[in-house]
Image 1 (spheres, rainbow, N blue to C red):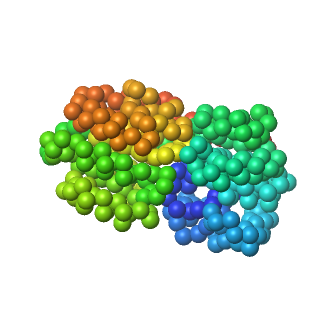
Image 2 (cartoon, helix red, strand yellow):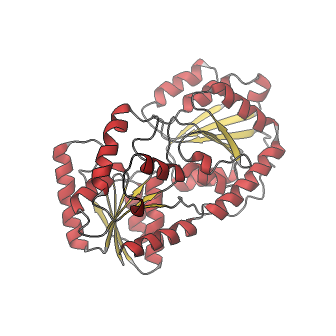
Image 3 (tube, rainbow, N blue to C red):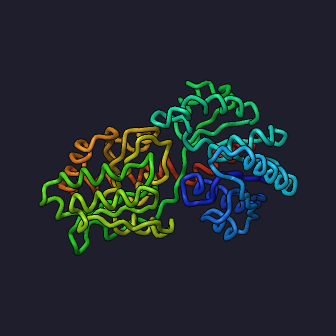
Length: 368
């Protein structure tokens, strides 16, 4: 089988991790795989490291510039003609739309929706126009993979495609070895981790506000590590200074994915993901696989992973409920430990990368 993966950006992210995992899986089966995206990011390096061809498409971006889109479509057409795939697998909104409208299912085409662009909470223009575009593009693919039940429900509610075209397959994550030294650190601090781009829809500001309202004795028992970069970094630094939390909060900037996983595995006691809207983020699965309890916003498909035995869900834009959740887990190491063990078990049983890859293989084979 020859598979052509098409995705908008090469930067580190959930959709890129997904494509890299599938690339590794299909190569291990002896299939031929190539990847096309905008150049210069983690996925390009990872694709080449695995030994698969990478086709750079410098015209790809999330900006709907007509001239650039035409050039991106032309580059896609040339690469497909050169590679001669049996199947084109499109990922992310812009590449999903462009790929399907360019290929027009002349080659069997699958689109994986990593959270619809019209999710509740997204900007109004997206919620109005994207469903229309998705319905048009759905006519030109053989299958649409939704990475959560929530995404599947949205596809049905917006009548994106006939039921026979829709399939639900959860994201998957590799399960690391258990950490034997968990909860036995010399500093006796509770380490909170937030991983995400410092831009909407992520909301690290809410975490800072909640930590600033904790009693001083609890503040003195924690450290907060925020991993990620983005346009709101300066505003976040200002808020940290304004709330006098510099001794407790570390802005680590962008880190390599392997380094993030290493820190979750060896340092994290609580993982926090705050967002105004989400699909089904990889970051919470990675935290669960590392045995870390999760506090997350009750949005998108997050509730399908974060059940009461593995973490706590809070309402978006509610610092008070976040403060209460933090207080509960900071003060109860036994509960943290129990949640962490159950989180790892759940990741292994329901969200393993092996399970995701096998189900994706089945979907691709049916399409071909």
